[in-house]
Image 1 (tube, rainbow, N blue to C red):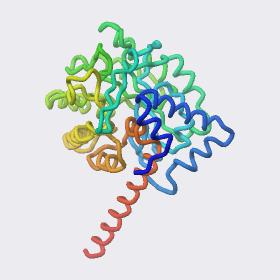
Image 2 (image 1 turned 135 degrees about the vertical axis):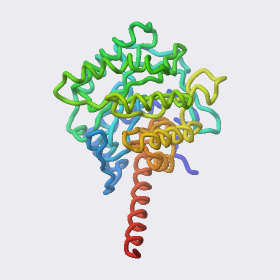
Image 3 (image 1 turned 135 degrees about the horizontal axis):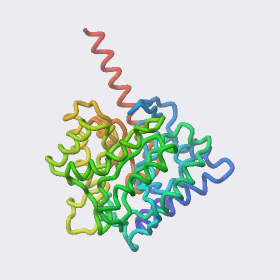
Image 4 (image 1 turned 90 degrees about the horizontal axis):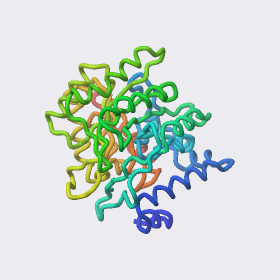
Length: 352
């Protein structure tokens, strides 16, 4: 396969995190040029493809978006909007700046199109992200923005509820939906609540705050792929029985390579993430929104995730390793499949 010099340099010569930093810096630089955002739209955005849909009461131009971790601090909202993504999930957002773990902290797994992430959620903190989302420009007028909320890595158990609530309250009027990260697993001090009591203690204060607001913001929970069936059923029961609006599945996995320090993302996670989304969709009879994430490396992965029951698909490692053109290629394949299905349905109706 022919590769560009830039892709060769970033993917094979630079460490994974350095390559991503260079990639996002280039996107930001291009977007800052007088006609840069127009250039991004013309070269990367899907053309004349109708993939619009409404999910949890919000209109999405396309079901394909950017997962948390790609643009953690909301610095590329204008550029990603120009590129044609249906939504961008910023975060994980934490109350105070934190540097994350020492480098190298994200590395590639050989011959697997996968990453090991032990970054510890580096973040510039709530105030910095707030400043970015307050400056939404015309380029982001149709972009749906989600906020992924995580916990401060060094926080104690008694501080967690206050941390989640602080970010939620301050970001509430500036974003369109929230994802509560209950799979904080890329640091040595991991936090993956698994019991009903632990999870409800985090999300119930958010429901209470939302009840007093004039505008409704959907709340989803992002879950670990390492939950056993009983733990996954607990999450689904919470979804059905509480005002939780949906689930994002999944974060990185600690169990796929337990001997490694960090969470596995990328191609090694693909099958597990699709399997979990399919199970959630079947158990809930398709009545609740699901954002499918984890292992979406190829256009075929995106299509399979939507076919499994996901309402939306969020990309991260696939964009890091295979570039922003993954959106355009995935959209084209989705449109082709949709057209073929419509044609088959029409033929079937005519025969009937």
